[in-house]
Length: 78
Image (cartoon, rainbow, N blue to C red; front, side, top):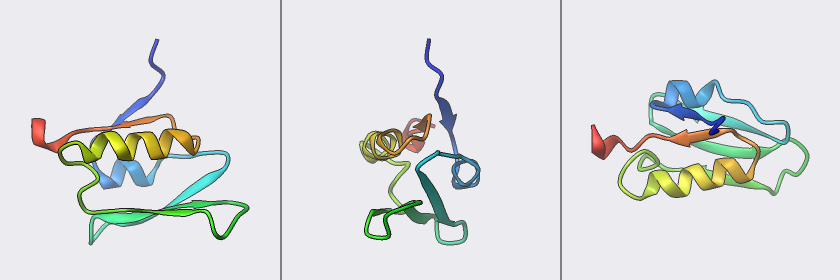
């Protein structure tokens, strides 16, 4: 069974937790960063396109690899 949360917005994503990483989301701009709790060099940018087209798949993979049990929604399907 899939224990991942379907994330439909930046606001929902901002609430997600990981044991190893945290999110720094700019809700006004619709973008943000995934940052390691222990390694300042380990950070990845989440662009304004994170919920669109095939980008939602890449964003999902990035987050899952860093301990977030999420699946990013595809806004193009709405």
